[in-house]
Length: 341
Image (cartoon, rainbow, N blue to C red; front, side, top):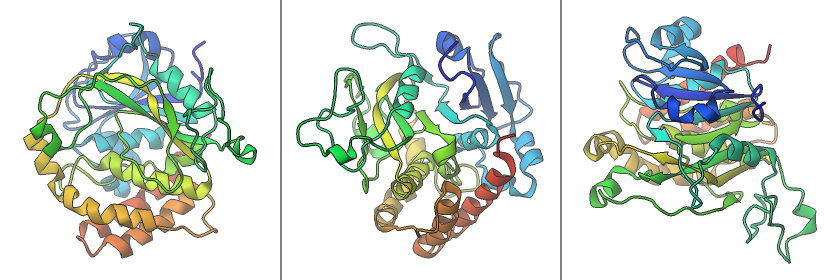
């Protein structure tokens, strides 16, 4: 039986037929898929035979969430977080439908789930950096001078994978480097240190739903919103601050997948341009954000954080007041739907 097959869901946002699953069949077929169809709910999405899946469209989201359905983005891959809500599993892996199986330098297919599971099931070391990176990996250990009192590590909440071929660049970088491809396979996993934020990409991401799932809200993006392509960034900033507060870890590095398609940089710029300016205030806000000792769960932390977003970022644009409301609505949905049976 595949590792954690009964404890992990794969969440895929899409607007198209899912032929890409054929390449993933050897790795994904043992797992349950949650497909979140964006866009026109009357469109029929084809899923290859042999996969165990649920498929939700906008009509389903509105039926299940009722007057709180507005907190799930429309016409944006941020809709994937609805899959996080309806999952009953402990672990989530989420992937984009333009991502395929990559090969390691030996020419072998990379089993992304196997590596993400290894990342999540071994501790993180956020309080002291190990210069051999992941000390729990075979062939590595803690280096001389690493405090013995910290070698037990902490539970891992987030495993952030990377991409070969098309790098995850913002629109201005895409424009000046249109032909750049990532061919560097770095055989390493590292813990993101406590107090350090990172740009979290949602196309190759796994997390422990019990530890940090309530903070994995991908915000308000897409139709009717003034910003796009910051959905995973928002979830990354929020979840990392909460990881630090709760004493759990986030890892980045392996596994790699093959990102096949570059999105249009001009379209991306229209979506990103406000965020490019706003992030210069947003990131210092998160860097200085502290949470109270009374907030001891991801849910409680996220509700407290929502009010801090309202007060601390509302002056930038009214969007952030609405986003704070969306964060609260998200937690209400989480509490309603995501408790284990």
